[in-house]
Amino acid sequence: MGKVTGFLEFDRQEQKYQLAADRVRHFLEFTLPLDEHDLKKQAARCMDCGIPFCHGPTGCPVHNQIPDWNDLVYNADWEEAARNLHSTNNFPEFTGRICPAPCEEACTLNLENQPVAIKTIEQAIADKAWSMGWVVPEPAEAKTGKRVAIIGSGPAGLAAAQQLARVGHDVHVFEREPKAGGLLRYGIPDFKMEKRHIDRRVRQMEAEGVQFHYGVNIGVTRSFASLHNEFDAVLFAGGAEAPRDPGLPGQELEGVHFAMPYLVQSNRRVGQEFDNAAATAEPPILAAGKNVVVIGGGDTASDCVGTAFRQGALSVTQLDIRPRPPEREDKLTVWPYWATKMRTSSSQAEGAEREFQAATLRIDGKKGKVKGVVCARVDESRKPIPGSEFLLPADLVFMAIGFAGPLAKGLLEESGVARDKRGNVLADDVQYRTSNDKVWVAGDMRRGQSLVVWAIREGRQAARAIDEALMGATTLPL
Image 1 (spheres, helix red, strand yellow):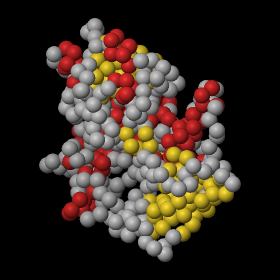
Image 2 (cartoon, one colour):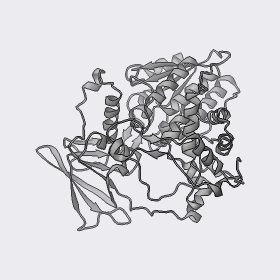
Image 3 (tube, one colour):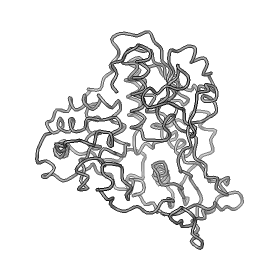
């Protein structure tokens, strides 16, 4: 550790945001990074913990060596900090922006509600590494002669592709969309992470030998059998795309949408992809001048909130069936695990009204268009309380209550791989091998909807399992 008394001398400080009134005028990132002097102070706060819970198993899924690179930042050895960070995380500039930071929840200083600003430091290391030119292609010294197909270019697919290319395999990534990134590009708004971060990683991976094939939907426009016959191994990394359907009366009305089509369309518009014929065929979903209701209390719902404000919504109300959580958790019963407590996202802070313990009973309309959402308060069993009904005016409604699993039609039907009772592809988290000996699976397609950092971890571990199966041994990390 850098400074023994750092956690006593310096208060927690995070990067700040642009004012809400300013940031809702654009779709760019709006964080205001700390300078190196302040970052050094924050790194100095890292304690000499006997057991650093921050980097696993309750903290960081990719097991970032957080105390090590905090010490390196404190001692101004940024280049070594970047090497250390990249040794466990292929894309720290992604996680430094969009990860909810379970590492900070697990930090020992969180017992005093003052955890080390780990996420802020991680982003700073990654951004400095890029600005200084330390992030360069790392092509393999020798080729193995083995060919691996990866279906899906989200965080799991990208992590696996990079790991496998670096040990010499011929890696081909097949992506349905016009560009790489999956959920990173088409689900997460630019104000949380600009897509230039993905583009430069793709360029790095291409220089390492990864070949990307866009506009190829395996199981639809190209058969799974052709990949199965042509490649030595196939990795499924297609994500969990099927939305959970609440089956609400009135959800067929014009103006009612699932969340992801709205976010995808917005991201295409911001990314200027509407020269694509398929994209222009979609009816525009825009919140300008409308009262918006978002059903759901998670990250996807929050992204809908922020997007709606940037499009000029008159009002945005978010419905959460869960009770209003406490402002602070009971540390002695929860720490170092992720706690249920009141959290306000940057999007919610831009002016959203939040309704807790609110169930959606139906969606009302007039002449085929949505006009309002009928809700009711719920009891502890989430059953509507008689007499508690209320009406929210609505011109646009987004259903953001999670995902039911990967899409069944196409790839999964054709491949015939076994699935679990939730519809996810069946495989363990050690070998990641499916019921087809030539097929592996990683990310949300295996575990269900989860965090980007979990997808990166699974992609890395699946790459190791594939390399070991193909070569009989592997040098890739666990």
